[in-house]
Image 1 (cartoon, helix red, strand yellow):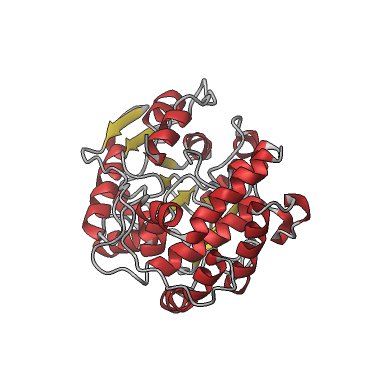
Image 2 (tube, each protein chain N blue to C red):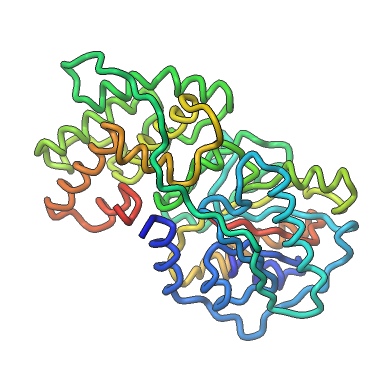
Length: 227
Length: 150
């Protein structure tokens, strides 16, 4: 973002960056930056809170009044990511002949469909759509049980993309299954990896691919780095 | 260390490209300015070209589109916020409200989305795609850009 700020400014556009990594903003020194110590992925801080978002924008646009730069100012609010797994009901076991994650994913389909109907858009579909998620989990199950990852029939042949689609399918479905306040950042990630059969399977398949000697990018980006 | 702390600690160690003679624009009054959003969330309008892994290109997002897909390839940030409320990454409705109140002059007719996961030198964005996007925004009459990182 700081590089783009310099490029845009050189083209004659005044810029304000909402910084997410303070050290980087200090080093890259864009003309104007408001550092926002908010969860990564939420640069305006709080979903569903127009008042807070307007406060962020007002503080950012106020930097346009500075006579010279670089300017780096901190938003006074710090928002920590929420590491408590989302409380979200999972479907009961329905077909014991299926791997647990495949059965689970099938059981979440109606919730996913409600999410799609409500939002009108889904970020599932990089290599599989919702119809393909159970099958993709079946492939990961085979890999976790010893199949060779190169020959297991991974959709698109891309572990990162497959795991993106699986996790996004679960995340979008989960938002239809919880009541109460909006989910905190990382709460849904923690629910996926710590509570669901699919999350556990992704972790097992990732470990199997790593242990089979696959190149680092093939297995590492299947999950967040800290896992 | 949670995921955000780990990512911030890692990002803080990355090299920062140097701009020895940085440009500085003295802006027009905000109430007369056309404002665009430039994000690195790899958002793109449904039906447009998806972002590939390591994609250094950009997509325009028309002012009236809200059916945006999150095309980012990094697994290391929260993706649920944008599913709950697009504005937490792409504050298009907030800009419309500011324009209606006269705080900003106009909302730009189109906005720009890049992908935040880039090689450390960000050479393509710095030398090629970034200047191209900037020229297109200037041609649209954009005076001010708010940059939202993911």
